[in-house]
Length: 131
Image 1 (tube, rainbow, N blue to C red):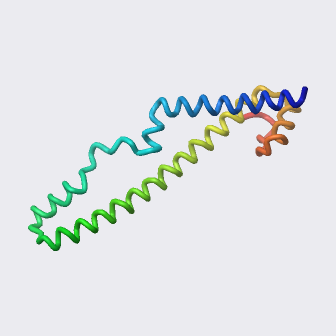
Image 2: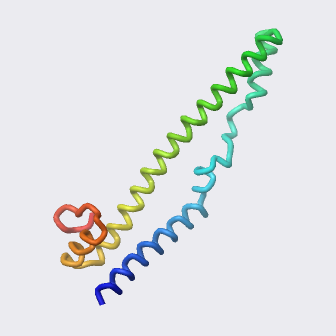
Image 3: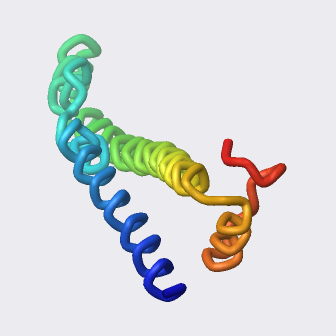
């Protein structure tokens, strides 16, 4: 009987996670994760290079070196952006986990909460009540 409750609880948490993931992907999270949509305001590297070349009257050698600098900057910028997005997603995932945990805890009696905390290894909620 106790094992079936554990299995049902874990299955419920698992299914809630699947549902949350599906909704997140459905409502735009996929594009944020994979940077599918390029910012509309960002000019292309070629456009920037051409603007500098013509307005600064760059030589061919200067244009080639500037192209290398822009390419390096682009890679560095993208790496930083990915790290920022990853940090944001981690925060969102932590929030989702906390919300799911609290919803489960709302359903349980104090004794069940204590056992749930023990079973899952999650930090107990202060005063034994869900947030």
